[in-house]
Image 1 (cartoon, rainbow, N blue to C red):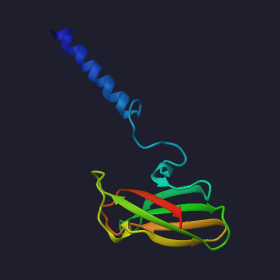
Image 2: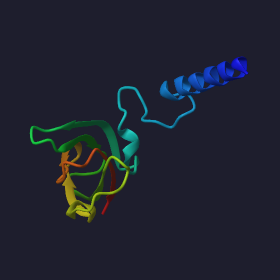
Image 3: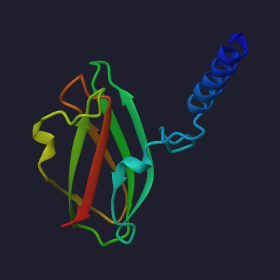
Length: 129
């Protein structure tokens, strides 16, 4: 009986260790650009160079995205962002509607700031208009 409990305890500890280390889980990707998977875009029009996420002095989540527009100057795009709370739910805000942006050829930085301090994550979609 004591041996069976010890075996079960060891198995549980092993499973917790594997999940905690990322093995067998679908957690946040690690590496130089862990937020790129949260951005949906067409790589035939845009190149996504970098995504940085941080909190500003007011405690709001900020997403800085560095694009490289492969199209001509004045190319119209539209985007929308969904801010997510700690449970993965979408926070309602005016940001959910499509917004227009015009990009020139080459480097184009974009800064998006959540309107709600409950935002801890995001998803963004951008497409050529």
